[in-house]
Every structure is written in C-alpha cells, then in structure tokens.
Length: 303
Image (cartoon, rainbow, N blue to C red; front, side, top):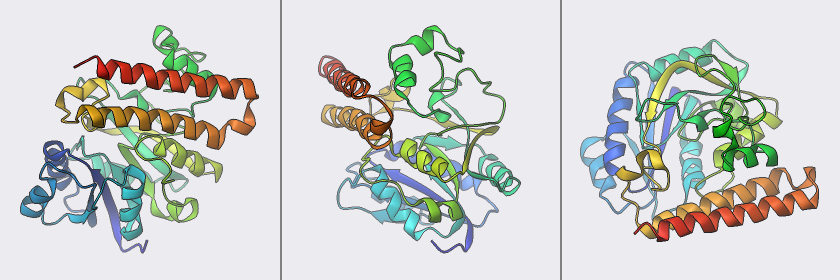
C-alpha cells in the first residue's frame, strides 16, 4: 500500500447487484469533496453485477475474480492496491449517510491512538446491529449468546457480554471487535498487523483481524457519531433481518451455514485451544457441529 489518497473504500460483491447499486449511490454522496477511491472486488457474480458497474459506475475500480474467492482473499486483493491513508471495509448490503465518511475521517484524524473504528450500524428496522461492537467469543460468552441467555438477561454484564449489551449504544467505548460490514481502519496499522487470514472464507475474518490488532496493542473503538444501514443477511440469506431480500440459492445458504460454523471452530482452535482444558475444547467443537446440523436442518425444511 502506498498512501497517496485520504480514503480507499473496499467492497466485495457476490450476487448482490441491487443492493450494491444503492450502496454505491450512497458512497458517491458521502465521499463528495474527499480525495478517495472505491474498489469493488466481484467474486464471479452471475446477476450482471459487472455489467451494471461498467455501465453506471465508471469511477469504481473494478476487480473481476474468475471464481468465488471468499471475503478475506477478495478484500486482500484490493487492500494491496489501496492508496488511502484510511481504508473502509464495507459490505455491499449497506447504505451510508451523507455525513458518514466525513465524520469518520474527522474522528480518526482527532484520535491518533485508534487503529480501527466503527459507527452505529443499524438494521432496516432502526434497531442496532448488535454485532457491530463485540467482545471476543470466549466459551462462556459464546454459550450465553447461542443459548439465548444474553436475550433473556439483556443488558446483563454477566450474560450479555459478547455483543456488549450492557453498554449504551449512544456512547463511545473501546471494543474487542467490530463487524466486517463496516470497518474504518488506519492503513499504517494494517502494514504492521497484516492482511485478512484467508483461511476464513466468509465469516470470522473480522474477529480474527481485530484479535491481531489487539494483540499488537492497537485500540478498536465504537463511536455513535454517525450511522449506516445494514441489510444484514441479504447476501447469505441466512440472517433473519433481510433474508427476504436475498437471492441466495438453497445451496448457497447451506454453504454459508457451513462456512459460518467452520469459522467458529477455526477461531477457537487458532486462539483458544491452548487457553482452556481439553474438555472445554471438546464441548465447544461439539456444540459448533450441533449448531451447524440444526441450521442446515432448518434450511432444508424451509422449502
């Protein structure tokens, strides 16, 4: 990366043409007056995404992959080419406000100690996407989250740790991880931390990357100075908020389930195996396998 611009926006697309159109329109308004570049890395979409970009968005730096390389690898291709002082990793199923980019740049310029930040990420309903600010998923936090205890005891410091529900959505605070749908990052920090781990195909790469930032002592911060809309689930088809907008096939949904649970297992094995007894590790891996089977069963029987 050679820093020559203020901002590089990077979007990985895969069969999300209509959502990507809205996303790019919102970026065009938000980046006005700012020296920047916008990359779209397309993972071999079959919905005419490429034709749309070439016809309507000639200012986009388009990278066409010949196959679906996954989220991490596709992002890394653009990160290597990016020339911005800051990078914005953005999902195609998001919409920015007009002030989003300027406010995030101002925030980062005034806070040199921060390497990664995210704003308030909202679902179409107006409620916050709780994944936009997270602690790392220790066995206890993961259990409380997936068992539903975090919802039953919402706001509890004991049970609602993973998505940090015990903290106000309206105050700035340090977090362990933000969500890959919107990650605003200092390029100089990426040079030291490195790129996304390409072993993570579709999920978990954001958590893993943030883990590595934290290991080097960098701060990751949630700030409510601005917000975006996230049509969560529109790409994969397996998340309830926007699954109805998804054009993902049954096979694509099943692959998303497998990749999401594989990412859980990979993250645990990479970062926690040597920190917990074998019995805990065995229980975690078994729980992940059972979760995968349950989710695949739901998809198969929703036809």
